[in-house]
Length: 376
Image (tube, rainbow, N blue to C red; front, side, top):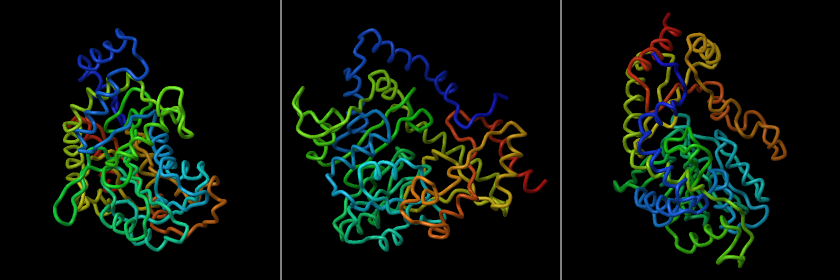
């Protein structure tokens, strides 16, 4: 059995090597390394896949979030609501731009932002909400959009972990994650479901005026070469990465199916173990399983992690500390107990290997090890 990894990037590359190598060699041969034609082609193909009007590639997912906020021209000190159980990038860009992160708790089953808590956090200074589609499925966007419309707030979707997931509204209509709010963002970090061989990101919007602003900000604020209409940044997706991503985009549906099959196999192994809570599948969203995350008793989580490590099985804790309890955000005045669901999850969650190359043998070995820990 091959060595177990959280994400088998090498195995995926070997399987797609002929297509990837040919695409990247074409860039090398052309030497159009910055803003080559493959960048535009990839953006067009991704827009078609997501059924969104505009895709603006950029250098990474954090840049995508920052550029999105910059494009909305929000007032200094404006409050932006963001989940406390989350990666730091959302809060980070809010704070960097002179805005105020306002943390709210999450739903205990899906780990995504709790709309009721978001509603309670709205004040006269609130200007936006940043829902995060965590671990591979959509946040409850219909309720978030209803709140945003009622309060005249912007919605920026952090879709770094759920590209390809589909949201189902109350009338049965479907939309891809990242295309519902005013702006959506994603990351192409190598471990993501659609990942490149370095850094990369993109921004989505249905609004043409916003798209123009986003494009200008990502390109030094230029509306034409050496003419600057706004303060911008330098954030580009490399041509080599775009060429690679365009190949992987043709495989994204297969990637998703492979992850869903792996998740179903894990579920079957763990279903009868009372101390394990398997991932909840929200009725309003498909799940593309960027992570396969269990909840286990807090007093056993770290011991489980150590037990798996002894057996050569990697695991990760996403996330060990909620955002409001980090030193960097102490200035906001939050304290332990403010967001009990997020704090409890940080003690209970553990993510198992999840990727497109998991073999049945590997998955059985992983699952049996987890079960043996609780039943052995």
